[in-house]
Image (cartoon, rainbow over all chains, first blue to last red; front, side):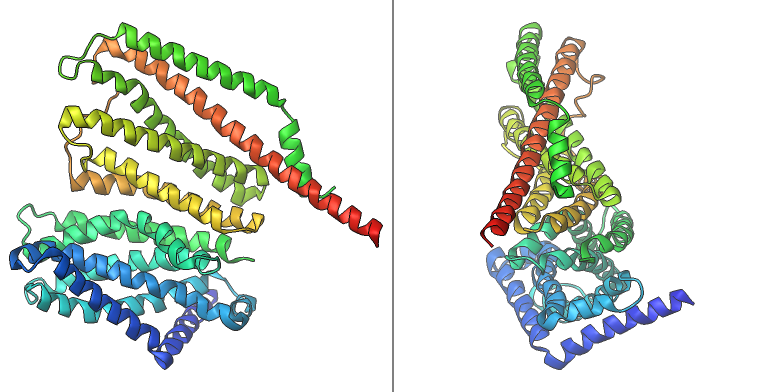
Length: 228
Length: 243
């Protein structure tokens, strides 16, 4: 019973955030545009050599996702801060962690949609094989994005409420994401350009561990950062 | 007297400051002594010659840094359970000392690596893990510097301190799979017996230095808060008189 009402709250928060996003679209369009731009800039920085580009593609793709996605998280709380909506949201009965889970889901949808644009573009720009690694690639992208969004949503709950939020969020978030970046890059790279050592499984396991550990940790720590 | 000032003043008064100054002086003197002792008794290493002597600072600072970050974790958890200001102050003191020790470890490791491995930096697991710890706890300190309200800063940084420590084994596992060339850990079992005693003594000496750094930083922070509370109180009293 209680679980069902909490799930309804989670859904309501996620739906509210996504509706607000859908009605303006300005933020989503800007983030997608920035992601496309970063992807191109990596191409220029790495040079036009197709082989070299393909070798670096997985890293460039993940950094593009990280650098553009990080802009989405602060926004998801700033919407609340304008007009004191956060106070109202906190006053509703029920577990506050439902707000966290709802926001994670909304941000997850947001970043996955950005990826839906960025990944096909990377396939074109960096001359990557798509059909072969397709399903595995989607799985790795999903697992990597879950961990990224979980910690991003958690740290943005703090960073969005201080001065210098634009710089504080990456300072807090990116060092914590290094294991995720290493694992996601290695797994993606193995899927795209071959996996002679058969190591994809190990990296996917690491991603799963990272996701589970921080989903649980952030879920329980959220009370400490939101109760004001 | 507000309760906040009460705790800060009590924590500082409960042990005399002079005692810790003596402890600090003793720790530094002991460190200097055991450094000299280790330098004089250890023979030059077969491959590295006298370079090996960097180990007597490099390894102890690394060990102590990890202990300091462990302290941040424990104090952060204690803060969230008890909400007592002193645990927050201990956590930030340990974090600052840990960051300094990590930086020392990395600089010395780099100086050691250049003549031995031929490069200043290499992406070896333990080196990389240490560097990642430096940026993770740098982020922790950055967060603290941006939040002005004491209670909120304590709560937020406690959560961040806990998540940071949970990440340590994951970071280590990921970079170890990623690449491996570091010599096996400098534990007594892989180090020649002529170096062991010097290393152990120095580890204890650096540990003592770390403890007194943390305590002195903690006391300074608590005094600062007590002074702020007094100033506030004085301003209030003055306000009443003038009204």
